[in-house]
Length: 485
Ligand code: AMP
Image 1: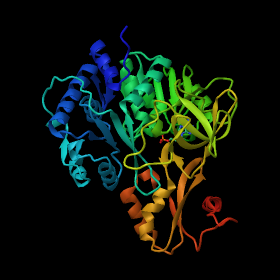
Image 2: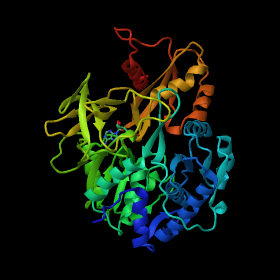
Image 3: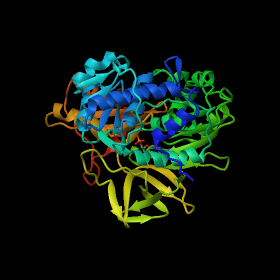
């Protein structure tokens, strides 16, 4: 018997063959069938082949149009890897990413071509510039599927290349564990520069289902969108639902068709999961967990009636993967410590930089997540927090050190320290500096380089930073001050 391939493009092409006339994506007010998306992505693949030569990576501007979805497919079909660019991120950030990933070509709407040229792109194409037709097969070139960038504490975004095999390992597990069908309608809330979007696209297309793309500014309309689009498969960060709850938009019952809901990206409070179950009474809710470095998600926990902890556990690793708890040098199968992971979904490391987060032990390669967990005797993982300063803001990964590093050159001998602050149920950032300075140019510098979600809400001047008994910076005191000051 022929083995089923879970390569993302093979999955898509199987649906093209089996159900060409079914809708593959609903975006910008219209649906595109599998046959139409196939054709468009072939034209994009042909463009890539014509202009990219040996170049293995192509940027895809992540505006919510069919061009982006066909762009991702086309780049992968040409045997290359895609580098998604968030439409709202500043061009200087794009530049930093494009330089690190050595990208010179991009698929993007014409209105941003000038900006992308400034960011270092030489060759660009919009829908209008594509070759009219191109019959071509699925060429296997690069083993890399995409490069996603996450916040890096050195002041520049950090590139995480992920291979097609790693994506295939993820898809194999998810597509076979949870039953999806061509009748399904998937949400596509995640930005294409967030790796959870890869789940949306390829789990959906692997099932021959329809991907439903809400407008970029539609967070508060998520419930009515899901209802109008007859969504059956929901996937979001918990804070998206928490926001709806705070706005009193999460009511019992409006999502009767949702039968499968996934959450990932940050801790899932049990009461929030239960409230979502009331809104979507037929949904099975699953908490997924995983850093970008381990490809989309790597552990899972179904939210059942037996759960009692305040935060839903991370559950167990996907089959074929190993989770251990690291304390010092030792890797244990139970107890508290830093979660380290091994298996086919762990990526090859960062772009152009080595990192102690990837290490060998017992003949295996491991990734140290920086997450503090408890592994119980049944092997179930429970999230306790971080071992470092990394924070999540509405699901976005933020290294406060990146903000501090951007400010550093403007502060002379001074220093910046950014801390997370909980305000009205949501986390925000506050930056302390130890030099008397006008914050306006500091904010301007931050806005030039960082996405909006990474901007501190305040810059606070202190005479000097508080230190603990061992001379270590007392971050807790700063958090306390930002919270109550
Ligand atoms: P990212 O690489 O942006 O996907 O962020 C990965 C980080 O998000 C992890 O290392 C965790 O700190 C956090 N995270 C992801 N999923 C969960 C979850 N289900 N529960 C708690 N934290 C999570």
